[in-house]
Length: 622
Image 1: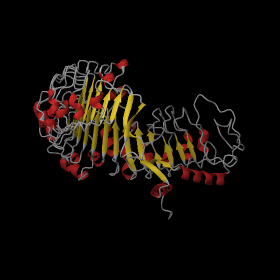
Image 2 (image 1 turned 90 degrees about the vertical axis):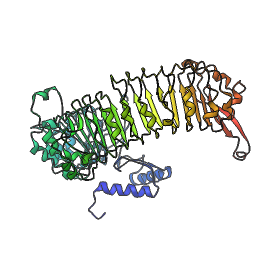
Image 3 (image 1 turned 90 degrees about the horizontal axis):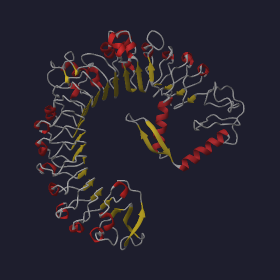
Image 4 (image 1 turned 180 degrees about the vertical axis):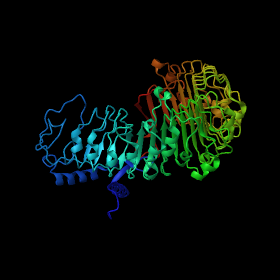
């Protein structure tokens, strides 16, 4: 190193270099490109172990141990551990008595302490005397309530990991003096005492994720500006929590000016806001973030009258916002205030949008030219017709809408690129719009828990729609359909419309208690079918004779488990020597009676000339 790189940056370079040289394998990175885990080849591991043993004396000598990891169940106790010369421990002193060079655990020379996932409630004050400590990992310490007051004395601390410490209610002042800090997963504001937001001002080397809790304790905009988040160029995730409870309803809110003052660096990639009680809208700077997720917050709009189109465009001319998730927004009326005209730059690059539990959402959606995915759940007043403006939409999911018996016809118009439509838990839905026939690109239609739906267009993944007896709409819309699954139907026959799905490759029929046979046209029309599954069809006894002419059929599954009401009549008939065997013996992959029969070569030498069936048992759960 030339002396200008931080040790963490050097580590990233080393890991990357070793990966490129194939010493590390299966490197897994997070969404921001940071390495999370990697695997080491056995030979490389043996070499590393040999080097460590040569350097530290191996497992035979423990006087010079520098790294020690202990992993044992909570209900077991270590009785004896023969280590000598331990210089200072608390809870481990009974068995780590003498180990002068140990650098992990609570000794003055330690630089890395990992207590992640432990049951610890409070850290001892003695840990503040570990002046060489660089890494303190407390991730997922769910019972931890406070940090010791002397944390400011840990001058060499670089990583304070607090992710998942949701019961942490107090952090001492002085943490802002730790100028070496690179990781500070979470801070808990303490009002007039304890950790202050202004302590973040000098911590501009922070990387990764930062969560700030109890922002309702911030006095005013000036205090929020002291955090200087815009100067933290290496932060990738920012989570902001306001405590929105019944006590706050009697107080004066300053959430809007506080959030406005917490403007982060424009390279921030993920923003989570929770409990925000601003009454109108969000600050325009959210358009600079790639992904924004808002939970349990009060604004009526995403972009209000005070944020003009020009303002949003000035802050972020390219519109970096790609994903927007809005959950539990009781006052949300629309994405744009009524006074806002056109489509602000904030939405020009938006690709994913999700509304969940927004009961007052009623204004039309604006045009969003890049939107690919839309999810709408528990939004009973949604302006459904405005979905037709989303002409780039590929995927649409709608669920848990009470009182809606049918969608407006215009909802699906203009969605020529829509490939996936999922409708679930719509207990009052009785029919789908005829405009479904215009979805010529549709490849998947999933319908679940719609008990009153009696007639459907025709497609995939139909769950628990027991009144379904026909797919009565035109078939042109499903010419591209490749997968169809119907689960839960009282029909006695497969709907006639299925014969018009020329591209169908996979057909899955489950829970058809009245189905007695498959139609005669089955083998003649489904010429692209590759995979057929029949499950819980107790009255089904025979297969159509022309199924033996279906040369594309590669897999057949017939569940015949009597404990769950399988295909008890058909299953035995399809076994080798059974009445149906001659119809299916050409299919390479057949799953019958919890056995898998594979078309498998006897040997490598004979692979090109001779094959035989070799059965072996498998557990099958339908």
